[in-house]
Length: 186
Image (cartoon, rainbow, N blue to C red; front, top):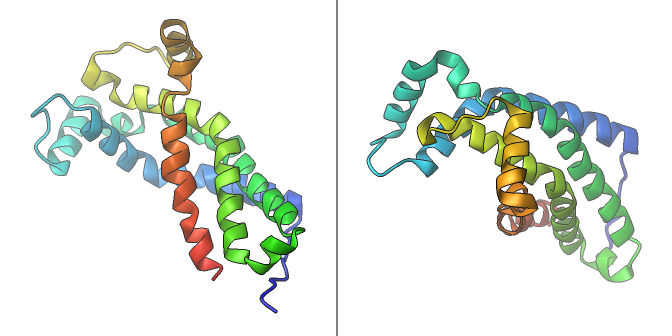
């Protein structure tokens, strides 16, 4: 009849798995993210290739240079991942109560992903703003003394808008990337 029987994972399992996986994913991915951030903010001609930014970053600070902003990303991804996946599961559970969503499970997964992104970005975006400022501060000649200094400096100089810079762009890019949930559930 087109209805999907929704299987629900206990909340505590979703919270535990999303917390651990969110943190563990940051370890191998952070250096790649640092290189991407440096490429995105570079002054014209500063880097000619991926290899060059990697080489220059290593020369400037060794392996630790690839982990600038890591504590913010690592510890921030615990609650942010937890909020994302818990919100996703909760949204899915609520939406599946509606007959219209029961008949369109792909739409349910998509909407649940977008809603979860909107909720989790309340934490993700400030984490990302601080992380990226720390990642590129050597290229921009900034002098943040750490995570909290970066956050307070951004807030003092740019206000709440600076802390949440890119919130709606993030929702648009990652929220609608939730088409993957929609396609996987088809």
